[in-house]
Each structure stands twice: as C-alpha cells, then as structure tokens.
Image (cartoon, rainbow, N blue to C red; front, side, top):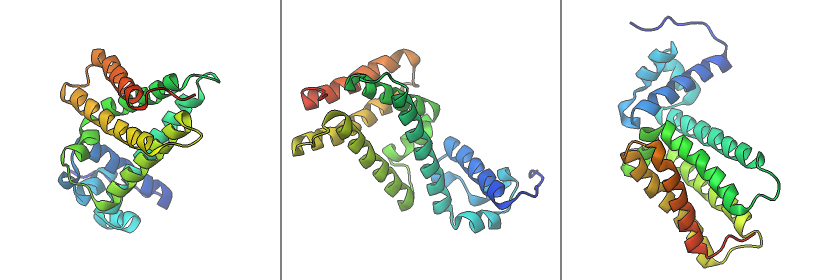
Length: 199
C-alpha cells in the first residue's frame, strides 16, 4: 500500500523526495534502489522525482552532495569549537573523530564505493572533489607555507590509510572499543609519513 500523497509546495516536495532517497540509499546500494521506490516512500510519483532531479543518477548525486556538505559542516563546527592554539594533532584527531562517527552511522553506504559498489559518475566526481578539499584542509593545518611534492603524496596517501583502517573497522562491526585504536593508527600513519606535525 502506497503512502497517501500530500500537496506540498515545490521546496517541500523536493526536500521530501531527497529525504526519502537519503533513507533508501543508507540501507541499500545504488543499483538496488529504484526511482519508484524513492517516489513511493516520499508520497510522490516517479514523474515528480524526474521533474525535480532529472534522473536516478542525479538524484543519487544530490544525496551524496548533501551528505558531503553536512559532514563538512560538522567537521568545521567541531574544529571551531576547539580552544584557540589547539595543536594540529588534536585538531586532526577531532576531525577524524567526526569522520569515524559518520562511518559508524552509515557503515554500508560509506563502504560501498570502496568495495566496488556501483556509483554514477556524478557521485564519483563529488567524492573526488571532497577528498581534494580535505587534502587542502590538512595542508593549511600542517604546512601553511606550502607543501613539498613528497608531503603532498603523504597527505593524499593518508586518506587511503584512513579508508582502509575504517573498512577493517566496518568489517568488524564498528565496535566502540576499537574506535580509539583506529584513531591512533590513523594519526600515527600521518605522523610517520610527514615526520612532524608542522605548527
């Protein structure tokens, strides 16, 4: 039985569809969720979904973009809440903690792109852009005067280390008692790659 459709203005209708898509994609992979599924749970029609988002790929990309924006905002808020002159290591620990919270909240959806899950090109480009911005954020914290090519490779590789550590954590069920070891392993990998913590 489909939910009763309600009359909503354009902004609320679009938001309802996006919320439905976010919920569906948190529980299933991109190929497993149809536009009809999203429409039904939003109390809309497939035609309306296409009207607001164009295609299934664009709808998924909108979900990814929203997730990246929300996650980035949480990291910025956590960093801003730290006392002034907080050492770089503690700032990065705080931002990693926000990342681990995100991974633990959406383990399947987070892991899917890293283990061969199919994603549209639009979403892949969004994730690549987000990763590049993360590298720039670390550079600003650790190497404000600029980075060498070796340091650039180290910072890029750091995020690969974080991904692999988190994949292992997800595979073990994101156990709370393993959260701190994951954090320390990631911080140690960055410290080892750079040799020091800059400022």
